[in-house]
Image (tube, rainbow, N blue to C red; front, side):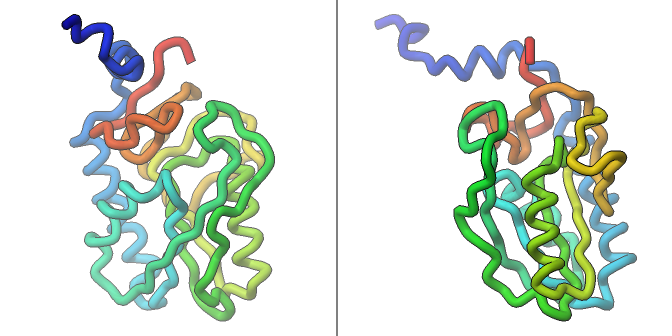
Length: 187
C-alpha cells in the first residue's frame, strides 16, 4: 500500500510553510504578556473571556502564568468557520458571565482585520464593563484594521501580512496544534 496516497493534503501545507516564530519565541512572548497583564490587572480581579476556538491554546499557556485572582469563561463568535476569508458574524456561544462593573480581559489568537474582535469588545462594553482590554498572541501588520491604527492592549508578536497557522490559529480547521507560528506558502 502506498502511504503517500493516504496522506492528508494538510501535510503539504506544513512541509512548505515558513516558520515565523518558533516555540521558544512564542513562549517568550507569552511570558512577557503575562508580566504586562499582571502589572496592569492583578489588583482588578478581572473577568477573562477566551475567544474560541483560536485562543484556546494561547489561553492555556497564558492563564497559569497569571498568578492573581481572575474568573475565566469563554465565548465563540466567528466570521471564518473553516474558510480562509471572513463573512457575516455568527455567535456560536454568546457572552454568559455578567460583565457589568467588571474589568474584562479578552484573549484571542490574532488581531487581523479585527471585525469579530470589535463586535466582541463593543458587546462587552455595552453590557456595562468597567473596562475592556484585549490581549492577542499575534498582531498582523497591515492597514486593513476595522479601526484605523488599532492595536491590542497587550500584543505578543507582530507578524507579517500572510495567512498564518499554529498555536491556536488554523488553516481550514487544521494545524491549530502546530508548536509555533507558520505562514502558508503562497497565501
